[in-house]
Image (cartoon, rainbow, N blue to C red):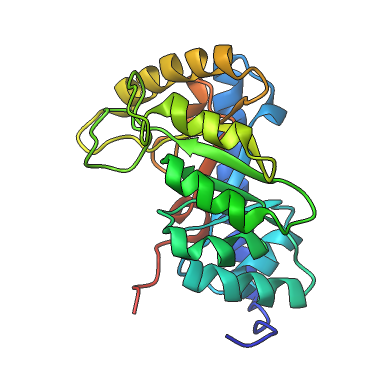
Length: 247
């Protein structure tokens, strides 16, 4: 990647502005329907596979939070965007390998995908050199399937249980426990998935009252997620259009 992204074409900026207006309206309508304040929900623009120029354009349109799920792509994109004057709040939302922690902590403001005690430890070690704590959301498994990503609610597993993972994050001085993240499991209706997540989130907040963030909902189901208490929605295609094919 170059240090400075190519300027965004006027037609692309118009596409992004239109997509953003539609997504913002959907969020506002969902908040109204749920009896919630619009300010309680943060839009995280998921820009994976899109160029840094789109990040710069979105920042210019008022988007404050951007999500990426591949360190190899995100690290360079963050540098490019910063060189062009765009400094959004970067969320790492993909599966994170422990050997990538040192890279991720250089640009990420939030890591949403911590789901094991070992990963929490590796991230804490990598974040120790930062000048401020790294915010962490614990990724929770809604269906409790240990074969998928996510810490396991209602489990005493010392490595993957939700409470042991959250405790490891909360005890690390270089990390700040912000809340939970989840993805609706394949084959589950969003209503069922987010109702289950709301139950887990309520118990989690009883144990960690300051960890109030709940990242849930994407382009196709953000309204349902907001209805069940999501504070962050991760939106890609509805905002930026169909994704380019990964090469």
